[in-house]
Image (cartoon, rainbow, N blue to C red; front, side, top):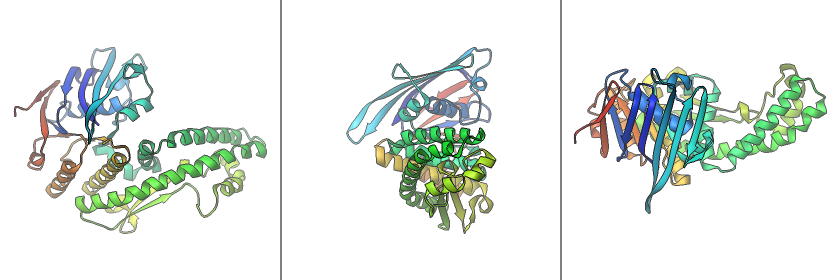
Length: 362
């Protein structure tokens, strides 16, 4: 999967932007605060209908504008050649967002399926430092792309969970609370099975990338289902009805699952530097993208913001080697075209100045 065209209107600093992409690797070079990250943000928003910077849609609006618009074209690259992909559009005005895919009204899930994107950016240390939601979402992104049944199961689970929680909050009879448990058990155990199967394939790839990027092997990846798995989920829910009623929520299930990452048997976030954290996130994302490509024959796009940040020269060189080896399309921003970045082949370089992006003369 390649992005071949990106257009933007009134998005961040750009009143108008039109960028064709013809190569696998794309580098945006320029000073701070000139709009490099906004290009990656536009690509991400085109794929996810939201910014990776936590910004509201209103905050993406350019100066003195009433709407912003993103448009993109993709193509599929397979072992048999290239085929047309999708045309995607996201438009925001007055608090309302319109999504389009191939000329039709679309949902955020339609965009997610049509344009797979992962991002490595300075705030990604949240994946390690914040609560389990980030790590759970990371796992589920991969499961969504490789397991067609996952989305339906997750929707069924969330619907039953909402109903059970409502019964708990309203102090309904125990029979009404219990009525939702068979659905929670069936869908919850299937969700956990799919997650575990995905992680079984993912972990060896993560370890391989970490060995190349960081040179350490003392990593552990422990998946916690959200309940003590030696006890059937049905039994857990039954045993916890009284305490669930007291706190007015369901305390166990796959919505409480967590991926715990350890380094030398301790929580990784307490033991590794920011540079190592960035390498760990890169290893997680590279492995995730590779397993998605293996299962779907479509390589997700990787966005790498602020390449040099937190990385000593050896780490920069290791990451460049990994990106060069990755078969999918990559977009990178950097303050300057460093020696490490100059090692990349099949690279398009764009110089970014305030509201202006110019391709380098080759």
